[in-house]
Length: 169
Image 1 (cartoon, rainbow, N blue to C red):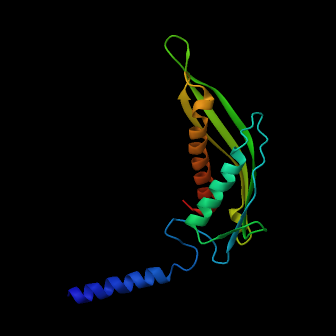
Image 2: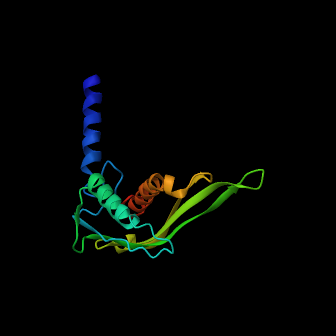
């Protein structure tokens, strides 16, 4: 009986895995079998306040995410999948007030506009803005916490873009 059950489970697993041709990975990415490359452009910074490292951090983050979580080769040429965009907002403003009517926390917000093109599945193409923010204690100067906040925000933005681009949730 155990041998029969083990055989059936093995057969079932083989059939299920055999039916998963191409478009699946264990990261949850759903990429067309034909797609071998992705091109990622630098994101020019059109925000009214410019963080000079932000564009490079987004570019590096996206490259790292796609190269580590997919089998796609990142290329400078027009890839089978293409990501481009621009930074449209980088701002800080008060996000909460204390009981004594003083600013308690400030919020750093970053918004980027992204265009994604999939040569093999045009229905997956999109143009969308992504926004992420982090709050920080208003008693701190932004320059003291900015690097850490930007790092967290960029990671979240890259995850959002990756998920929208190649993960079908």
